[in-house]
Image (cartoon, rainbow, N blue to C red; front, side, top):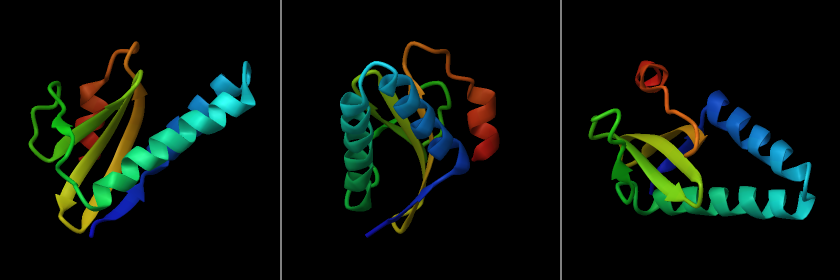
Length: 102
């Protein structure tokens, strides 16, 4: 079973998402964060379940699409996964910054 590591960037993303949604609905902010965390938990058992990130074109950099969010992660091994970012799909993904983290 894989160990999931949330990077500083991914934690900041999750916090920003929650803060933004909470301006309209604290309840929905909690639900959204919970859904994202639950989707990530599945990676413990199925680390390769997400698709490759097309912009990065690196086999180990994958993503789970959850509503409007792209949960981008790096599979180091079947026992170690880093969550790199939680990215809103309406925004442009800066691949250069993503690849530097890998």
